Length: 298
Figure 1: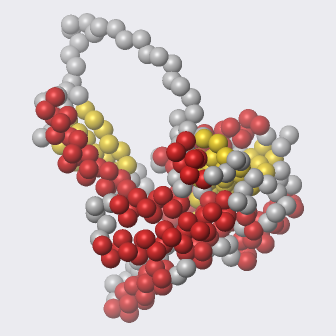
Figure 2: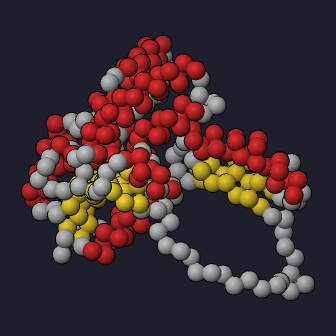
């Protein structure tokens, strides 16, 4: 029976997030073929999720070993104090993050790479499977050539940056910086993807952009739901006004941009056709749980 190590950023293991739901489908598929250990890549900005490891262990109950490792830091966490010195240090760190070569953020620390090699030798993994190219890189999976690495790209790294450049809400100065980042990431991602034994994408257009023969599409919804039989409701049953529910993490800029676009450009047309329609928006709180944010009826 093959043994897999599933490498996942800790936020993408949470089942309350879309990334976690895709991770869970991949995990269940691997668990049907063999045994699965999970390596969670984390950093200080995800401390709240990391501290709730018990929930992750419950959700992935069939997994063997579940461990957490820290590698190259991707984000700078705002300081809890608001002193002048702490703010200067914080903005200095952010500036350094912005001007660093993008390849830096795809490199594992020496400790992470050595720990992964030791884990491979101890547990005898047959395949390393990573969610996202960056996770595979910073974990040290792509720094070794002993075990084949399969990477679920989900969204292509350079495409994510290019979408931010195209966003109307991105300031011009940031667009210029992101253009330089995207150029560097495109080169680094191409180099790292060539090291993968196989890669998955979420769509055929993304797969076509890769130019890799060892690639295939893994759709976000990997099954077709059975058709639902509909029947007329009895006259005694009243139907409430139609409601569209938007649920998403407000901290994620793409969610905010998408919601603004929907409200500005789509919602008026829906209201014209369905005057009693309601739009409800719920966003995830910073620490845990969900909190309703607002309801729109006009």
